[in-house]
Image (cartoon, rainbow, N blue to C red; front, side, top):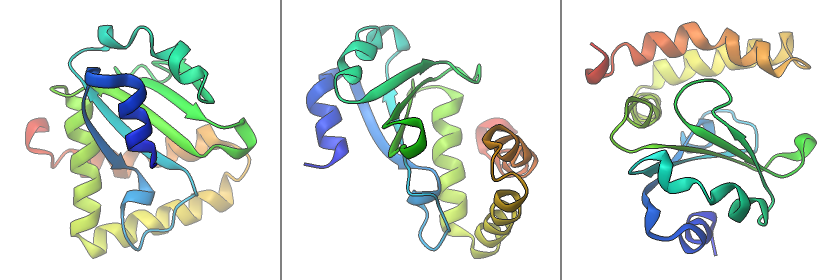
Length: 152
């Protein structure tokens, strides 16, 4: 059973859609072995019981850790994370941006290489400071997302 099937079985019809996002969802892009999954829901209110349910499955709940309007979960111990879950309203901006970013990198070899080169440089400079690594990618990510039709 794959994780999408497991999550759908655990969380039921509160899930509207599940999408593989992040670097591992983009062929030919170097990535850490952590799967990012976006779960689209009607509203975050339908997920109030999820921290307990997912906690029993090895997920840690972080809430809206970056004040972006999504609930975040990580599976596995900090030194060996395997899955990140991003739970967002399916009709919201974050959902559209997750899919737009993924699809933009899948469709454009030059853009994918530009992003990969940035990630590689930053991984050397910020090997022990994950927050700095993530923050340093913001400018390019924002540039890409500015092309999202709903952001213009």
